[in-house]
Image (cartoon, rainbow, N blue to C red):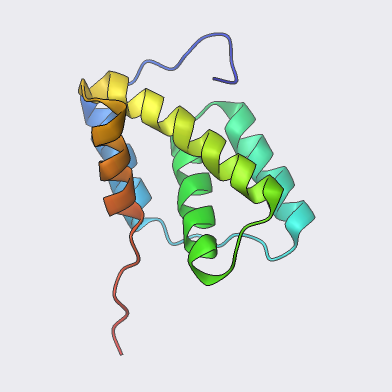
Length: 112
């Protein structure tokens, strides 16, 4: 984790983070340097909601194009930290939490 003191989040907060992950519609910059700087800052901040946004943004981006090495690093780090936070709060295994994250980041069907 980025900070020396880990966040201690409740199960209720963990469920809010999963909902945020599912519903977040933010955009990631198409400029790699701007995106990398923003993602690094979000990860270093140590906020689970920031991890969720990094994960969601890069997951959506990955569905359209292969990620750069830096983007993959940020996605993997965001997933690792998010899994750790949620697993502790929900009392679930990392594998189960990863399934929840995958489900929450799955593309929503578009309505025509």
